[in-house]
Length: 386
Image 1: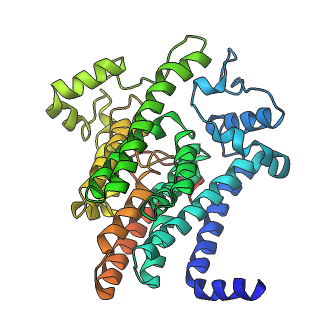
Image 2: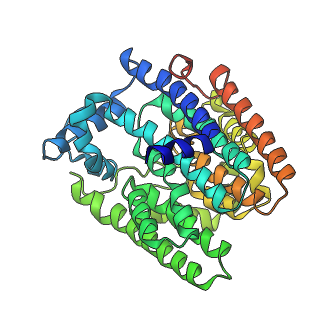
Image 3: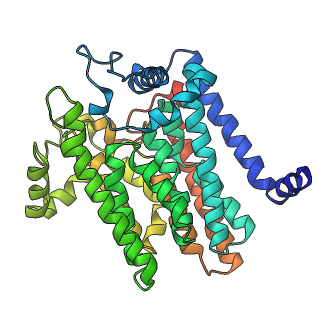
């Protein structure tokens, strides 16, 4: 057994070296922030309290950020905290930071294995994993605090790996894991799975599986938004309809997009608030996304479809912080980019694989350095530099 482990370490030593370097950097960000009181009641404080409550076998009522106690599931439908709660007895109040770093590490392994599954050579597969690890959305998420959407997003490469490998039992387990992380993950997975329908339209078994998963995602999203979360809410309604530029209800938002598609499209790029200092915030995010590998989606437009709900939730939001390159609101870009890169490089020559891989890595790391140095949207540099 020891000999087999040593052989695997030698076989994948470059990947392991890069993973250790990035995990060290991430640790110097999140744990140092926590030790220096640069983490917040929202979200890390509230979720750690919930973890404590679940570890002691009783519900959590959000006392950290609410004047009137209310079940925390009415704020975000996050069941992963229940799953992680036994770890509180081991790691205490840094549990979720440990979980998040572990998720990022496993996400990079998933990207690596997905690349190998597509028959990319080992060096290119390592490049794909490093691109994922160096993505600006991962850095900003680690510097922010903790959110289960980060953990869920890092599971996406494994979902795709098991789906295309027809390992349906593990695929369903990862699928459920992503769905229960947060209510909007179900909507994202609907777009992911409908994208898979197109990608595998000529493969009958995979196409049928993708159709089933997309319908399950949509039904779960509707159930959570209109039934589960209102059940836990004192006001008996979903509390995060914060897209008033389009409407004050889901019906108004959908009708606004359908009736005025040109305006809806332009709002993805324009500041829709009266504060002129916010001009350029959305543009910067689009530039960051484009230079960090978004240009690869020109070759695979189906990934733009998978990106659509993420960008709509960001750019239509009432809170301009959501538009920016800060916090955890860009984490979904990272696995989508890595997956798109693997698809673009599939069946290319080794020389082209490495050239495009290195180009993407250099561009991606350049954007991340820019994030740590100077941005239009506010990024707390004391929390992201290491």
